Length: 139
View 1: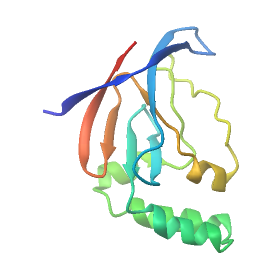
View 2: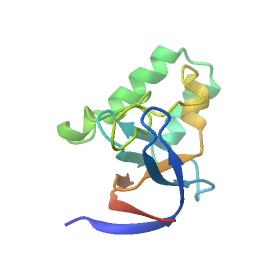
View 3: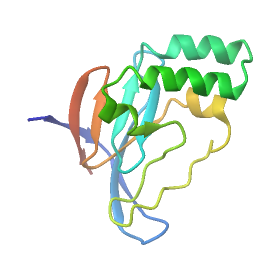
View 4: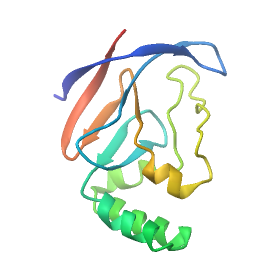
């Protein structure tokens, strides 16, 4: 059974259905990381070890397609059920209506990959470098 972990948080309203959504966020962590949201729900994959390789590509001005191909190769190292679950452009969603929340860096790959804010929605699963938790948000 997956352990639960509590985070201090807030509530917001879904812009589509007005449902109250409990959320928290991770920022200013011990180091840079890459994070991805699931395509179908609010689960989060966070990998610190992947960031240096992607950062080199970004700093070298590699084309977006090169960076995305490298990310695909990194995701392919996950078990098959997880590899297809996450993608760069997925964002958090309303747990009720499943509509994605607006994302400020949509379309800008560099800003998306360097975004330090990881949003955690109540009930999501956070897979952080192999430690897996179900997120509870205390408001």
